[in-house]
Amino acid sequence: MKRKPTLVEALLPIVFLIVIIAVGILKYGADPQIPLLMATIVAAALGKYLGYTWSEMEKGIVETILPATQAILIQMIIGVIIGTWIVAGIVPTMIYYGLQIISPGFFC
Image 1: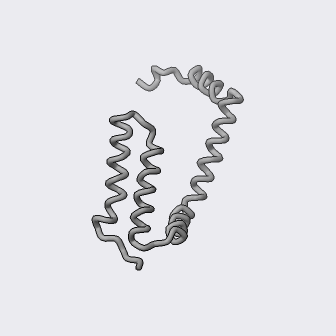
Image 2: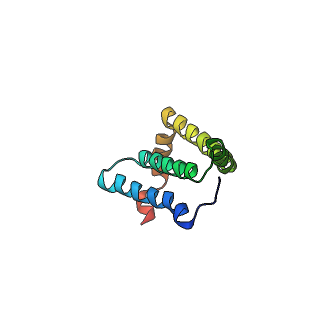
Image 3: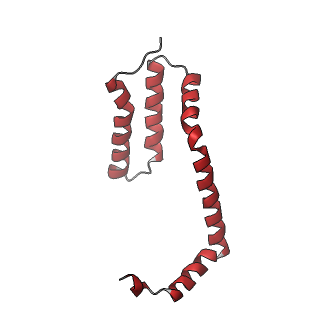
């Protein structure tokens, strides 16, 4: 039987995420990807505990991510353009000529 989470149950994945990322980064110097995955597993386990099926949780995930897909796509395209510019030497050239036009002392 599906039910809404209590306040403590709703805060559990968030608190777990904050704690596990803080411990992973500050104590072990790790990247945050593994703690994020662990927090996702905790949230999915809580969803199963509350009576939701995986397909319902998957549908909720998709509905949440869908509005951001356009912004994500734009960021990916910008990343590709910047990567292409770096490989082609455009960024170093812009830095070189930019420093010729404006000296660093200009900003002091």
